Amino acid sequence: MNFKHVAILGAMPEEIGEITNQIHDKKEIFYGDLKVIQGTWNDVERKNKILISVAWSGWGKVSSARAATRIISSIYLGEKVDFLIFTGVAGAVSNTLRQWDIVIASKLIQYDIDARPFFEKFVIPAISKDHISIDDKLLKWTQSSLENSKKKDLNLRDFGTINIGKIATGDKFISDREYLEEIKLQIPNLLAIEMEGAAVAQVAYQEKVPFVILRTISDSADEEAATSFDIFLKKYKLRSWLLIECLLKNL
Image 1: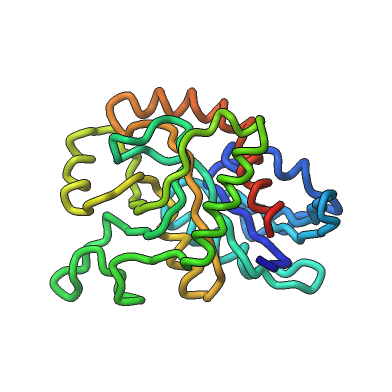
Image 2: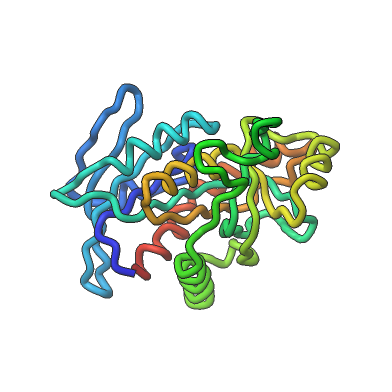
């Protein structure tokens, strides 16, 4: 991969962790109440410098879509954003997933969009698609980058299995197993559920910016989800930068 200016976005500051302490020559741009921090990250081993724009959007599809639109419009040192990484936590849908497992989205679906009878359920009218897929080359690159880094770096030992699959997005924090089962019936082979990814994917897709969506499992989207999520987030804040660093080192 040969990207020059990478945008990194999460819903919460905890999801992008220490990245603002890892970049140099920082400056801040404000779009209303949205702050985008820009700077350079130096890969000492490869003597490579990458331009970074980073922000957190707030929860939900509207906030994340707005932030994605703003951040990929950023220009830093004369370079436009040419790659977007959205990262953060998600609830497990698949019974095989546990806390700290990683899910790389291969397809993203907005489970709460329903424009029937004009369109089939889940179809996004603006693009006439019921899901957005990640570029296969980027998908394989993300997987190999994380797998190779996990083998070599003991700092990544807390993270679990690396999985590729379907992620669903909607404007609801899921803490109801019965509601989750309804979604599973409608969207087979779903791995995880969250509140921003598919909205960010739609923006990146329509703006023709390459992107990946990376999630770490925080809870099981059941009645214990709120407690599990809160406890996990405090721990994740200390480690979230490690996943971002893995990808930057392999650009």
